[in-house]
Length: 162
Image 1 (cartoon, rainbow, N blue to C red):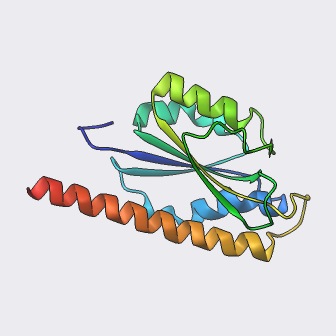
Image 2 (cartoon, one colour):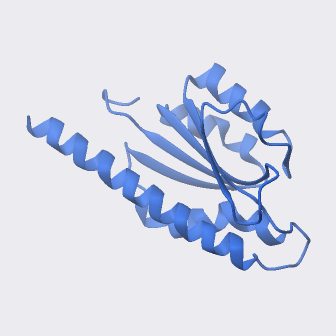
């Protein structure tokens, strides 16, 4: 936390070459303008989120939102939102290290709270495009994140004026 303000890192994980696994990078691209130094950083980390641990540590966020395609046995395009996730509800991620290990490391070494925003993929086949279901879910997630960040900014502005 810099200057007593909450800060958020939105860590978007995925492989654009693997159909619905492109969910994270797609969301990152759509949120590119949302970046606001000191409040929100959007990181498209591809398939190597562990390479961004030092970046996250330097930012020192109060919260890290992990955005990824995960198999939680839902229907394609279903969205899971989990605060302080145990990752018991998520059986498969296509990335190494596992999301659970990554989240625990961030929590223990940086002290950030973890929020998981996941989407149930239809397919993670190589060379395929995102499914209609996941594309639609991506837009829902983008809209929700934009709205949430806007509300945080407004609340901080009101607090500063008080």
